[in-house]
Image (cartoon, rainbow, N blue to C red):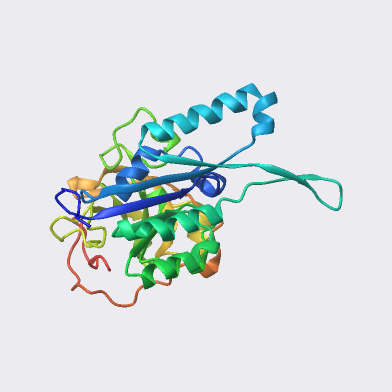
Length: 312
């Protein structure tokens, strides 16, 4: 098959489990930004599938629900998504309670497997561990599989994917309410989200790495590398929420921090203030232990002394 014209020549398929994301931290997510993430590096979107449930019975009696759902589906189509609706069906359990069910897993899995032959990369937007076998099957066929999700992400799914990215860390994918009306993500005075990659317990400070733009080379986590899409900010422990200071969980790539970016003292780099812990319910088993070795020699960073280089 001849590849479509494009600078990268690569093709991507994006498969979104709408309900899973909405119920696990991603409610209000911007689907245009999700598309940009999946298609980073001038990758051509071959498939953009969004799998959503729809309660037809409720829509008949609840006009607000009907109009909201139809408007949402129309917006997805405007962004180029194919909307696959799974009708909600109601069942009565042993206690006489009516239970709604609309599982989209099978549809998503089958489509991803059948349509992958036309792509080079598959992006699954879900945290559901039921897709682990789908990831393995796609990888066995030679495809790169990426996963993006927010909360309650299956550990097995994260580990099986070629790349896992927390949706919280993608610039502008999920709005930061207290940033409304302020500077864009990443600028001085703005709010952003990132992870603490280095922490000095004795000196009570650390460094937070955050993504500034969605680029193809997300692996360039060392901000000194040409083309790295990341930046770092200094953070004193006094700016951290008390629960996090007492938890002894830093550094960790799984603790998501939200912070305001301000100028450092004497113009030396930037620092984080008003820090909050986005996902404090992260199970301890998901927390990444601190790295013991760096792939780069220690060098001053952000104008501070005795700060190790960023770790890959």
